[in-house]
Amino acid sequence: MRIDELRTVGDDELSADIVIIGSGPAGLTIATELAGTPLRVLVLESGGLTATEEVDALADIENVGARRAQSDRVAGDRILGGASHTWSGRCGLLDDLDFSCRPWVSGSGWPIGAALLEPYLARAAEHIGIGCGSGFTDDAFWQLAGRPQPADALDPTRLRPYFWQISRDPVDPFDCKRFGAHVKDLVAPNVRVLIDATVTHIDTDPEGTRVVSVQVAGADPRPRPVRAAVFVLATGGIGNPRLLLASRRSGPGGIGNRHDVVGRYLMDHRCGAVGALDPAVANSALERFGKYVVKTPHGKRTFLHGVALSPKIQEDEGLLNCALWLQEVPAEDDPWESVKQLLRGRGDRHDARVAVSHAGLLLAGARARLIEHAGLPHKLDRIELRCMVEQLPNPNSRVTLTDRTDRLSVPLSRIDWRVNPQEDTTVRRAAAVAVEEFARLGFPAPTLHDWARMDSELPLMLTDWAHPTGTTRMSTDPRDGVVDTDCRVHGMANLFVAGSPVFPTTGHANPTLTIVALAVRLADTLRTFA
Image (cartoon, rainbow, N blue to C red):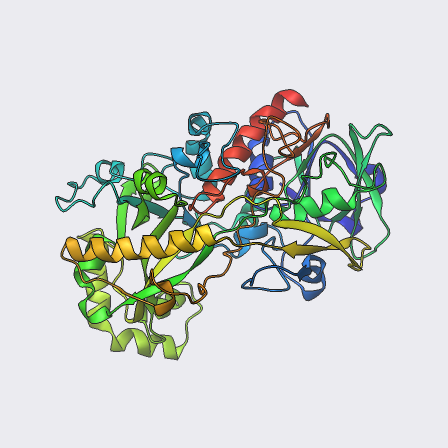
């Protein structure tokens, strides 16, 4: 793909068949899927090749809701590659239950099912840098890994095994896939990326049913029109509704907002450590509920074994979907970080000393990885029992606009993120069940923090996980959502939305695998649409 700065491009070059706004995993996946087609594709990225404070400030927010990890910023990195610049690389599958209408979860239910996404998961896996797109969680993992299923099974009425994959960059084996780093290497004469190109407004025809252009600005705040046959909005769970709401020239409510749904149903994943396990007694637990290295069709990949609430207990007790896992927190002098730096050519004498002084641990790590196909043993500061819980879809949890604007005169986002007692109940119950199951199976049981216990009245010490979701949700009825099952904005002929904002519910799983699978599916749609 060709990468240019907006300031170097003439006005006569600002046109394409398909314009993609945003260069995160969703946007770049669509562009990559369309590479080599007759379609002229133009990707507009607000940031550049590196992050800058001036561009980051364009994502400032006003937080009036629940406590967030970053009160003035929220995901949507403004840099080539978008959120993949800072993600952790963890990939999980949504459960079949997540797509269902659950009577005990108000607002639940996708208008598409898990089976519809299944054909796109394998292609998504290649984009993300994981070994396989499906068939790797629950008990299916053991067959994939070529390992016998453990005899000491979890109680299936309470918990089920759950596995995440860890993305691996095709160039740097010590890092997860950073989408932006690979743009320049893709041979795609029909795809062009413009950086430092911030979209400030979406222009429609007088009827407000078709996008005719978008206004784009960079270091020069003078807006310039970009024209195309089709437009894809892929700027994240905050950026997407912000731009739709701010595009008010054809109507005061913005675009796609005839029923006042744009920006509503803001969800995230509430996440954090609910307990701890003493590293001195944790070996058996980590051997079972730790990391596994598995040979896949795309090379060796790392999997993390955790647990999740069973569908039965969710239905019986009115709980949301929730997963837990053991998180190893390395000590400051853990030698593996030093080894990584040395192998990358970035290490120094300190790294060399740390590596040499922990030769025994490094030897054990080589044995664990090469012979036992397990995760590397680290020098640990502590082991946390962490959880990630689904949020209840709430129309009053939302993104609106403030009276303040950024330097390009776009109104800033006001975030009123709501949490719900049903989420608190779910976390406490899931933590208690996990401790009981660890003990029943003969493993050392984590000790829960006081505020995570069932009888506690203390607030849960959890924050968002930078997974803003649901703000342009998918629906068959325009009164209930923003996009249809093809991810096209209701009532708009040529405007599509990509990314987690289209999720009607979040499940507990990290969203990137689903985001990219939906992007692959959307790319197939656009091949024939344009």
